[in-house]
Each structure stands twice: as structure tokens, then as C-alpha cells.
Length: 147
Image (tube, rainbow, N blue to C red; front, side, top):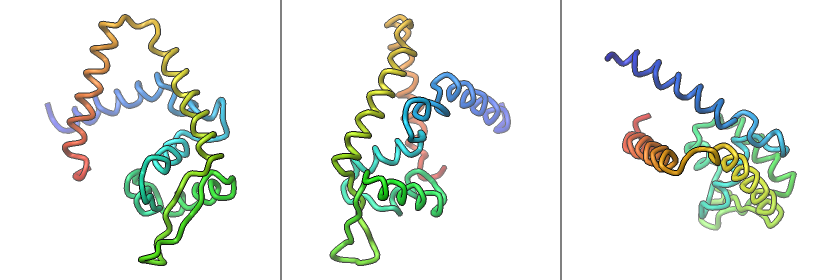
């Protein structure tokens, strides 16, 4: 098989998977946040000393696009910014109590959607599915810095 064949198969799977999991409407149907906004808010909640530069690199986002999201979060009181003592050019992002409340609603909604998506699948197939997902993640993680 040639690289172009692998490319087409992976793109086909990506289109199928994003349609199945409803990534384009998973959050927007029931909340005011997009999928990427939910992911960014989650990352801010778990990453110690989270910065805009970290988020930009982690999600491979355009600086201006990320800036608009963070501004919206700040104005919506989902996050706060704390200027670094060591380097005044760096601001650390922290989730607020209100931001955590909103994030927990997003997580609950996402869990409900995922649960309803898999509830009809037999346990043996779920085990197989999770093992396959773990394998995909493991392979891609090994080459993440080269992607």
C-alpha cells in the first residue's frame, strides 16, 4: 500500500468517526460552547500553570482564534488570568468556580451522549472498541511530535 492509500483510509475513518460521535454538534446542541471550546476549558482545568502558548501548541490553533476564545472565557468569567511573577509577559490561566460548573455540565452532557451511543453495543464489542482506540492513541502518541 502507498502513503496515499493510507491517507485516504484514515481520512475516510475520520469522517465516519466524527459523524458517529457527533463532534460537530456534541456541545452546541445543548450548550453555548463548541467542541474546541469545551476541550480548551477542560485543559485549563487540569493543566497546572496553563498558558495561551501551551494551549496554542497543544491544540495546534491559530493565535488569533485562541485569543478570541480566551477573551470570551475571560469576559464570561469562566477563567482568570494571573501574571507570572518571574516573567511579566506570561499569564497563567485558571478556571473559576463558575467555569468549573460550566465544564461539569459539558462533561455530563458529553458522558450522556457517549453512553447513549454505546449502550446497545455488546460488552465484548465495547472491549474490542476500547482496545482499538487505545492502540490508535498509543501509535499516534509515539509520533505526536513529528505530526
